[in-house]
Amino acid sequence: MPGTEPSAAQDVRRRIPREAAHAMRTIGRVIEYVANEFLHDEIPPGPQNPRLQAVELLMGLSRQIYLECPEMPPRPSLRERCGW
Image (cartoon, rainbow, N blue to C red; front, side, top):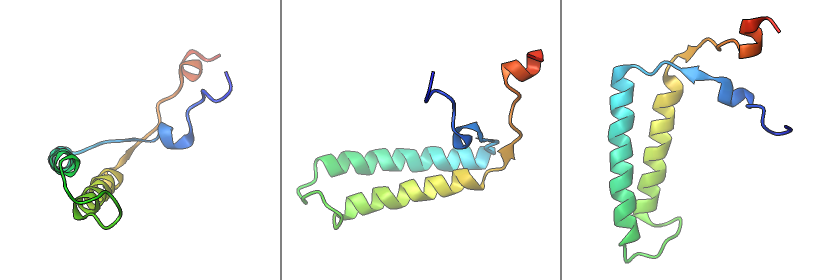
């Protein structure tokens, strides 16, 4: 099927050390908390909303931690493993 092949970015797997996993989990919980507060905020949504800015900052930090984790070698496809 066209469009069902994974992109090169999806092929990249990373080995996430315990410390990085803990940091990303913690950041995720903080993002969830701030996002919940954002939903009940009286400040109108928009780029100047400090809660939205905090969520964006935290998401960027989590992504940075993830991208610093070492890449794992790609796994051979089923076709390659079976020699087809």
